[in-house]
Amino acid sequence: MPDHQNEIILITCASGKQSSALIPHLIPHYPHLRLQCHSSPSAATLSENYPKAEIVQADLANKDDCTRILKNVTAAFLVLPPFHPHESQLGINFIDACNAQEDAGGPFQHLVYSSVIHPILRKLLNHDVKRYVEEYLIESGLDYTILQPTHIMEMLPLAKLLKDEKPMYPCNWNPATKFSFVTTKDIGQAAAKVLMQRDAHFAATYQLVSTPKPLSYVEACGIVSKVLGKEVQVQQKSFEDAVENTIKMINGGKEPPKQMKEIGARMFLYYNERGLVGNCNVLKWLLERETTGCEEWVRTRVGEIEKSKAS
Ligand SMILES: NC(=O)c1ccc[n+]([C@@H]2O[C@H](COP(=O)([O-])OP(=O)(O)OC[C@H]3O[C@@H](n4cnc5c(N)ncnc54)[C@H](OP(=O)(O)O)[C@@H]3O)[C@@H](O)[C@H]2O)c1
Image (cartoon, rainbow, N blue to C red; front, top):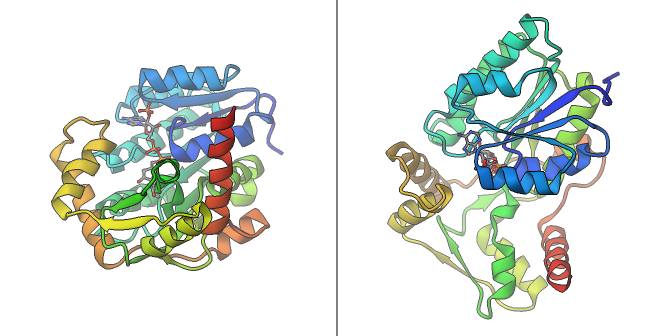
């Protein structure tokens, strides 16, 4: 049985979408949570939100940082920064650091890696990079679990659509292609279960999909329109606009490195033609409940946004 009271659990990319949904499930059970982020503003926010947790700033591209943040850690949740030009190497460095800690007599027991659905898709560079990390992890000798989330539903800017009088969703690809979506609520609960139950999930790979049927952005925005009671238009951006502006936004408003643009450009082209589709059976089994559908997600989020405005 895992000794929750004395173990240090490391959560990487703790300010990001996935880890933010996981941390609240762990807080009541683990007195020693170590939360990693990259920037000072995120460190300040994490300190304010989780005053009892240990906040560490680290660059996952730096091997010494990986060694430092893994000191005395028993289990880690690894998310890699999006569109990083050296993402595979970051994952490999982190796995090496876990192995080194364990080999040196450290307490390391479990690495939960949040990868992506279908990492075998070579045309999607941001999926392909995770394939190498999965392979390295499987062969590392570490006890591991791989989670494979699909397209995250929170990418839909619901707060803005709710606020705008004539809401319009600018889509970076053909809005008619189909996606299976996952909510961060479902990712957070699934990851918490895997971390807390530990050895029951060793050597497993779980696809994380919430929506029972694939939906296009036109259909998803139709559901948003129904819930908000006003029509949400969907407009496809030009390919150039999507590559120039969306990737810059992901890079914090700064001009992105060339490789980052290439990763985004390939993704938009792929989504234009094929979308991204999976199956919710595994997540339903893991959560022991129905996964969150699109309409349920929209209703819950709208309720949360309105509650936060009122307080
Ligand atoms: N979006 C999707 O639909 C989707 C679906 C499946 C998988 N994924 C994968 O999920 C991962 C991203 O997870 P997320 O969406 O939860 O994160 P996110 O919301 O995009 O946040 C990015 C995180 O990365 C951290 N970060 C940035 N550069 C870093 C560096 N050099 N070293 C360490 N940390 C760094 C940021 O820290 P600061 O806040 O301090 O900058 C932040 O915590 C990516 O690998 C992506 O491919 C995304």
